[in-house]
Image 1 (cartoon, rainbow, N blue to C red):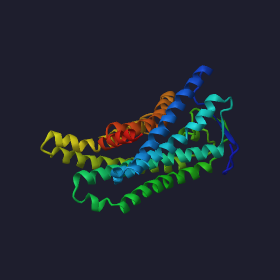
Image 2: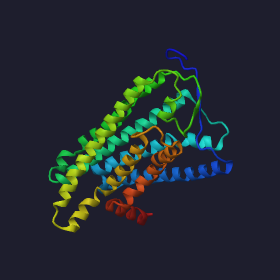
Image 3: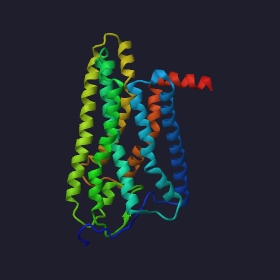
Image 4: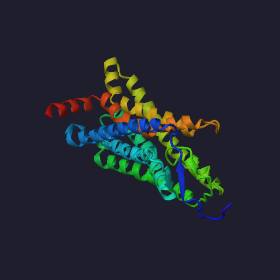
Length: 308
């Protein structure tokens, strides 16, 4: 066993998706098509918000941040996956692996924080409509967005530093399509107790903290909606936050499956499928969820198509 912080292993092998050459090419075509749609969908949301004045509100400002985040979140994993699918070489250097891990999980933390901010924004808009404009002004919305990004990247900086100090002596095979934390830590030949303690603490703070803000916000939102006398009024108010609620349910549902485990015997293949859903499918679905479930965005899209 190697002592200290020396790292003998200079590169890892990403096992990815084993299978026939035909299967690998089929996955490449599928992921490439989904990645292309993800870029188009999220860039469209950003362009719409920046172009049309009626969408220049805090809610759509946060949606722009979410779309920008989804572009980079999927980009952090997909290009290397493409290379592994069409190339015989499936190696990734230790530094590249660490950087990929840092960006994937930092962006993931940022998304949790950003969704909590969006829930708070909907709470203010629905529960305190008369004071909403004065509270959620451009200064506060900018501060909340920047705070989400800075908080997300700072949160994972400590675990990333601790991983860089670990020694990896072999084996070098990571049974995943990207540098997943759990898969990498299993390959370490030094004590990982400190890292695991810090990592679990960070996850609890970010995930449970953002979940608490989101949950409390929607408890107040739902209670306010139920006090509206007309069913039509309830439907109209709920439609303003239904898209965000859908995204929250998808994200937390997948995260609970991946990270809140009653045993360590989760199927690796099932974990890969759920991770594909989080890193590839969800960034693709989000712009369509917000488009199909948001009246303002749909009307703006219709106007944009009429002008072309």
